[in-house]
Image (cartoon, rainbow, N blue to C red):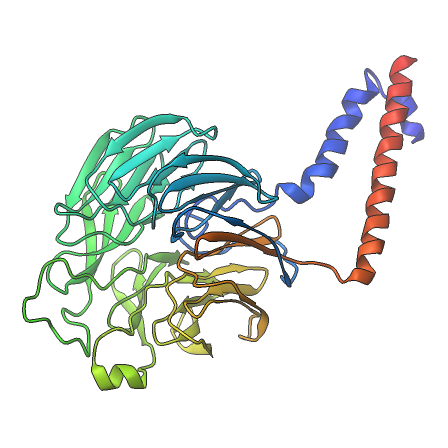
Length: 429
């Protein structure tokens, strides 16, 4: 305290920045800027977490919610079938804009980028004003990847394509024609763009482009997934890969409709390993090919995590593909995992949202409703879309600890108040 008397200039101006930082530290940690957190789609946020044990709040959104929330500067952004929302950390709706989002999740840097079901890509400011919009066609399912002032995104409809758009102007820079709808989101690494789509009947392929749209390499998985009964009239609209590529330590990981996870070398496009999920009795009996992997893999701690349509959550060794642990759920999984502080978070079609430790033990189990979108982690909370609601899950201290915590906050507030009062007194001198 004595050092205040030796400050040159206005003591208030010197103290306030420290006070503001002290107050805001708990509120500004761990942005989640896009689907699966980052350009590589790792689904990993490097922040400290307490074990979630309670639903802190939930908010009703109009229409089904299949997209995933994005959290930037303490504001949550998420889309539904009817609106695009901005919500504060207390669950209050700041604004909503009429849009049919459905599957696409926003990407937020300086501005907000989002794709809609009616085929538009929008650039908004954070006050919901439209900066530009570009019409691409129909049925944007994937989330926009924004990388080096360019947007990479695919479309469905009658003329599906994969596009590169100028993020500043909305002008199309190049496009790559596909056979079937692009249902995945692109990822980026070392000035290369990775995307999975189908370019022939049952021919799912992983593509690697440079930033100018030149194809560097592609990896083709088998033409017809095992166990699939080909329909009498095979159309060119069938697509089995909806798992977006995840990049981790110079490797690309994705799941497929043939019940396999692939690990591909980022540089060469060569297969490093593949892992086949379990075959359920129902699948064996009816041979429908429905045991596919839709979940995008999360990657952290030298492991990859995902859920499958065989009612199982998997953790694999990222280097070898060997199985580390599994967990049997009550239904298939469409949602993708999120990882932070050694814990894995994942929702399921059985209505449960799970938190696992590193060994696959359940730390939390919440009955929220069917989870189609994927969870996001920020500020020590987990944000989960389920049904037509957005849930905030977090740590709620036991009653006996609340009084202790309150006393701590009162003391901290008193200390800050005393510092401010002393500074004001010095200013008057």
